[in-house]
Image (cartoon, rainbow over all chains, first blue to last red; front, side, top):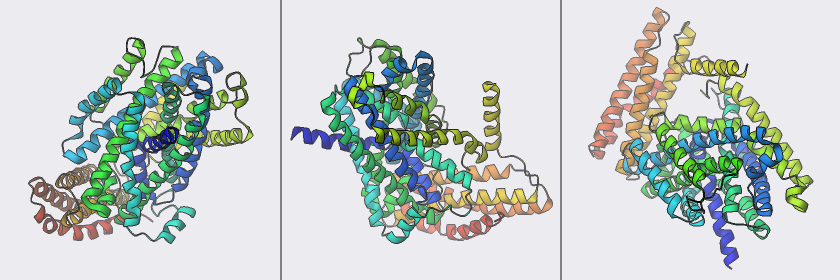
Length: 409
Length: 147
């Protein structure tokens, strides 16, 4: 019974953890601009991230070490260092976006400018990091984030033409006035938002923080194979509400407040409250995950003692790096750069660097010295290779598409 | 080599993101249509939140924030368009027509924001009435873009 409860809580945490500011913004933006014609990207992304997170979880539970701890050993220090630099940079930019995301969500409730919320949110993150056990921290934001399902229920409440919606999903067309390069630019952005590298770093390191072993692999797989697809359904729900309410009105999503507007139309004040609560929880959770992931990658590469569960004095360099990263993120957020622009560029950078995350996982998951009999089978490898081609093509196309579309204009 | 490529890429992106002068009437019309499309988004966002508020389905703070953001977005679009140099006399005439509509939009959105911030929510539907006509004017302007 306790095991079953653990699986349920884990799945719910994975669902809530799937959503972040990148998802919230790009789902609404794309739903309002392209309707349901990019739902296929969400399906592709969910299958891909589930496959690779399962590999990362398998490596972590069997070896007791996260994937990126093994990358330096397996691929050599030079390649691994390049990987760490790219990963840290992308994580840090995403951290800025998440920090702004939490502050923007609180602004929706208080109408007090988001910049004033940035320092208190960072302080709260610091306190949660130090005072709350890892498992409680994850479950707190994972479970609260489930209120975001108000977006899915809102689709029913808005009374759509289901036949038309299904037709738009399975026959994707580019709306009038949009070009093919812009369509593919946003497909790449969506892929970056939903195959976010930090989710894999965090899941893999989290398995070690939880002290999972081979016996926990089943639970990890439930979390991934059930939690992520349901998280994907949530993302599609946000796209669908934007498609039903914002697209017919010609509204272009430039603010987080516009993401909530369809839910306000469907459910009124209760809808706004649930949506904002879910956004605060989801972005705060992602803030913690990106913050920890930034330090995890660097500490694991250099072999420093690491872990949220460790006392700061036992993992002093990991702790110092976490504090410095958080302070840097606050500094960048307070420059008053447009937070939505930061978010779009964070997910874009995530997309452009996806192979840096996924190649090492595939390599380590095929190494019998680490996994013995639990190495990838032919099916996992076939999937892995297909996805490697997909993310590599997306990464290669990212810069030309950015230039041609002038950043998706 | 890589540094040069990166520098070229960054310059290209920044150059692309800036609003440059228009060299032809067609390009100027295109810029006007794009600006009208963005302005239409601000107008429709405001209309939708006012309708929602009038049904008692929105909180005062949320309505106030959305109206304030719509006004900011509209002001930003208007300013970006005003700084584009019209290439001909015909373009100057078009500029006057477009900026006239944009001024009315920003003024109406300012009135809405002021009323919402002051807690005069009952006045919002009446204050938003001009937005229906402005929406039609903006839709006409969006058709200036070559199809």
